[in-house]
Amino acid sequence: MAYEVIARKWRPQTFESVVGQEHVVRTMRNAIESGRIAQAYLLCGPRGTGKTTLARIFAKSLNCKYGPTVTPCCKCDNCTEIERGSSLDVVEIDGASNNSVDDVHEKILNSVNFMPASGKFRIFYIDEVHMLSAAAFNALLKTLEEPPPHVKFIFATTEPDKVIGTIVSRCQRFDLRRLTISEIAGQLRKISESEGIEISDDAVFALARMADGGMRDAESALDQIISFTGSKIAEEDVLGVFGLVSRDTIEKLAESILRGDIVSILGYIRDLDNSGKDLRRLAIELIEHFRNVLVCIHLGGDSPSFIDIAQNRRETIKNQAAIAGAAAVLSVMEQLIELENRLRLSLSPRTLTETVLIRCAKSASGLVDLEEILKRLNELSTSISCESAESSGTAPVPRPEEAAVTLPTEPNTIKEQTGDFQDNGIEDDDGSADAPDSDYVNDYESEDENADPDCKTSGIAVPETVPPVRFRPNSEIIHEPSVEKAVKMLNGKIIDITHPR
Ligand SMILES: [Zn+2]
Image (cartoon, rainbow, N blue to C red; front, side):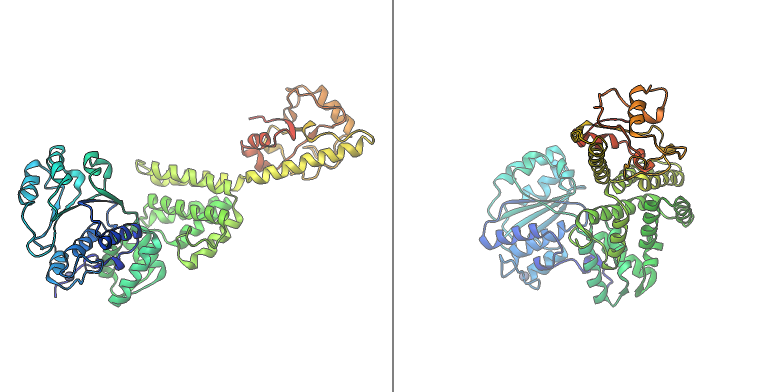
């Protein structure tokens, strides 16, 4: 028997064997079972997601010798002819090459009144229907609205926006979705087992990731890799043939970014570039990886419905979620998305990738989570109130909003973070102990903005009972311009912070 490619050999024959697309399958089955079969259906979706497959199963369901039935026998002449694409009653038309008015007349309108040869319906299936010319669409309109009872239309398109509204409104529309990596991986595993192919989990997931939601792409890739390696497939084979980056490398590179390890990042990029890897593909995989880390930060590690990766990779995602803040990961993702866009046109992808990943590393390792900033500022504001009450004896406890906080101008002048604000607990840049409270007040009141750029304040009045406090967060916080926002969000607990930027 002639060799048949996997994508054709494993094309689902019944509704039960269709992977994903449950919403479409269910509606089609219900329509057949209840006898409410529309005159026209429009299947929309990216390539390889099952449009032709569903159209053929639907046609078999209607024309099977035992039909209409939701479980066509797949053995009778009608079923086998439809599967081979040779049924006289099911006319498959390629809209891209038969797009003129003449084509529509010749292939459809002239024969629409003929009774079916052996089935119960004549079914016209037009693939890539958006390619029909406007005149061809118009020629079809009248028949589409009121076809003879034995005629059904099924249209398929990858670009539903290009199908004119008058056609869409006469159809029941189904939107097929991209398949998840797990769905594709599951099907590839099933095929491999049946074909006697030994394939590792990582190799299956590499193929599934590459397919971008299309089952046919994944099956074609599996065919190709079998031709290359034979019956035993490892991840390295898949990566080598398709120019992909291994999961290990992605994970280690991501960790280097989160830890700000620039030397290691440059090493990875050099190795990947020298071995001819596609750096844009690298950016896409990194985005996907950090997306998983971000989901893990918010939902925890055990969210299989949100994180679509092999089981043995979940631990790494959890570990990286533990060392990274959501703000840092978001910032990295934004820069990577921009990198992926720019790599399409870049003449020096390696330099661009190096530049952006270094920037990612700097921002990731230098960012503190907004929630953390708010927490620290809240603690600070409480400590101000307590200290004031203690130092002023009978003086009333000042409201938190009466405190003033001053931020230093230059982050690099900060030597250490001072978490608690004891009277004498804060050191100046030169390491000397702070002056008593009264001096602070005096300093504050007499301060010229130009005199001490480290301690600028605006002119909002501060009650005498409240000593202005030097807020000395670590330099990481100062890197982040959203400190200003964080302070504003405190809603008056601190009345003023002059941020130098
Ligand atoms: Zn049949």
